[in-house]
Structures are given as structure tokens and as C-alpha cells.
Length: 427
Image 1 (cartoon, rainbow, N blue to C red):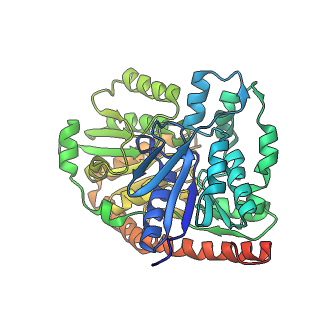
Image 2: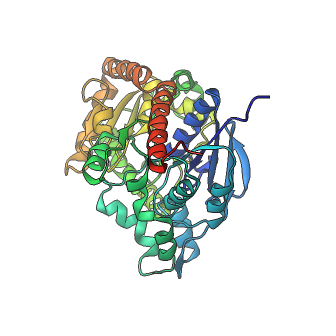
Image 3: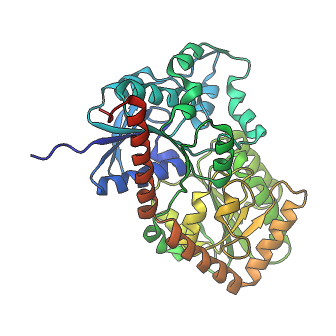
């Protein structure tokens, strides 16, 4: 009888199909690749934004555990905001599960702070390797975004510091057997800041085949968008970081100067007040008939692929972006891209070759983006040229099979380091 496949335990802060984002996509896709390679990936996470303790998502088993935010005086709204974005949670039941899980090959943390510390400590106690992926950026997060994430716990008394100390939360990156950065800018900062060289660049990937075919005409029909209208698409969390306000301002300027244009924004609301401000802008500027703000779509919803194929141009105007996996999805669907010249996007997109840049912090950003939209609307040949170059880039460099192959090499390097740390092969 063959021995059971060893488990790879992926530990993100949350993992919910209805609140899907780039981190969830990465975990799901690399888990599928790991299954094909004969491993047994599992997701251990919190019950944040979820009700089911156990379920299977995309063929990958997910187990969730009770948790809390160790601060006095948190309101329900504060806890909801922390669930949505950046909450430094504590889950002792998840930690116990990490200690008890059988046949573990390796722990893969997709979060830092207390949860990352729980992974670190479980791995050290069990003499197993652990790696950490930096999905949201750590070293290059703008101060304004960091302040927004911390606002729900502002002036609250924290009682969780002893747990952070116990789990070594501040040593997660220092003690990791491998640190993985999805963006080049994050990699450069991590190499300068960390006291070791166990830092590697591994970009996110895309399922090129999944996004290659879609029914754009059907999506337009469902949304009441004329077949010949110029359609601008944004897929990202409704969040100030993603900067949809700039896109709305540019779209209003673009539409006022000529082309029959529509804008579709798709994403879960991580900042309800920001989403309300976007809707107010739409109403105040008479855009209700040509702008649609749609809820986030599940990763397995065919509407998502159809939306990309319905679009003429995809825009990601983020103020900060560690990588930008949606750019890969747009490329794979054969769509031209305009993206911010920030973070990981600076090396993902080549200006004038695979896409166009906008400077989101420029005083003239809205005018510049509006001019880019008007140019794309007037020049279908330019759109096709950039789109085809992007599609070729996605197929060559970012297919999940290649990303998984590189990740396996990093896992083996982590295992080698863990074996040296513990003085023998991990048990």
C-alpha cells in the first residue's frame, strides 16, 4: 500500500469564495498544481467572513477556526472592517490544529503578525520548514494605507501582545526558511531589510486557458451595454488603495469629450464608506446610466471571464499594488491594459509594449488617464497590438504550471535550510 501524500498547509488570514481576491486565487491555483504533483495541500484559516467550518473550494479542502481580535472596545463595525482588511487576528484553535495535523511536509504562511507567528511556532516545535509569502506588501506599503488598516483599533486597548511575544510574531520573516515576494520592489526592500538571504521573487500566475475564451456579447447584453460602445473595465476590491475614484474622474472627462463609453467596476467592498463615495460621485456627475458598480464575483463564475471579453480596455489605477494579478487575467483574455506606475506593476507592465502607464499621484492624473482612454477608443489597432503583446507575455512567463515549478524549487531550498537549522532532516 502506498504511503499517504504529505500535506502542504497553506495558512491565509481568510479564505472565502464570496470575498475573493488575489491571495485566494494564488493559494487555490498553486494548490491545484500541488495536487497534480502528488501532494496534499490544505487550507487552514479563520472563520472571518465565513460560516462554514469545513468546505472544499475548487477541489482544495478548507478548514476554518474561531478567532478574535485582542482589543478592548471593538464595535461590530470595527470587527467587520478588520475582517475585510488587515485584521491582526488570534486563533488558538488554529494553532492547535497546526500542531496536530498529520503528515505535514511544509507550512506556507500567507499572513504575518500573530497568525504568521502561529505558523512560525508550530513549524519550529514540529521541526518542519515554513515559508512566508508577502501578498499585500510589507516593506513598501504607503503610510496612508497602513493608517487606514489600523484605524479600527485606534485608541483601543490591546490585550494580545503577550500572544504576539509568545508566537514570535516580530520574527516571522527573520526566522522563515524562505520569504517569497510577488513584486520586484518588495523583493529589493526585503533584501535590504532582512538579516538573511532567504528571499526570492516569485510572481503570481494566471490560468491562461481559463481566460482565453469568454462571451463578451452575452455580458454586455446582461448589463444593458450596447454592442458598439467603448467599454472600460476594472476588477478589484472597492477600496481606496485601488483608486477607482481616479478612474471615475477620468471616465467622466473621457465621456464628456466624445465616445459613447461605459464603465464597469467589479469587486467586493472592503471599505463601505469609500464605495458610498463612489456611488455619490456617479450620481452627482450624471453617470448612473453608463457606470455599473457590480459586486465581486466568485473565482468560478463564468461572468468574470465574460466581463474581460466584453471590455475594450482594462484599467488598474491603484495607489499601491504589490503585483496585479488582474492584469494577467486581462492579458490572457486579449485585452489592452492601462495600469498605475506603482509597486509590482512597474515591472509587470512594459510601457508602450504590453500596456500603458498612468501616474496615480500626479495632479494631472485624471486628465492623463482620460487622454489614454480617448486614444484607445479611437485606435482599435493600438489596443490589439498591446493586447496581443500582453497575451504572449502571460503565456510565456506567468502560466501557473511554470509558477508552481519555481515554487517547488523554493520549497526544497526551505527544506534544506530547515534541515540545517534542526541538525537533521525535518521529521
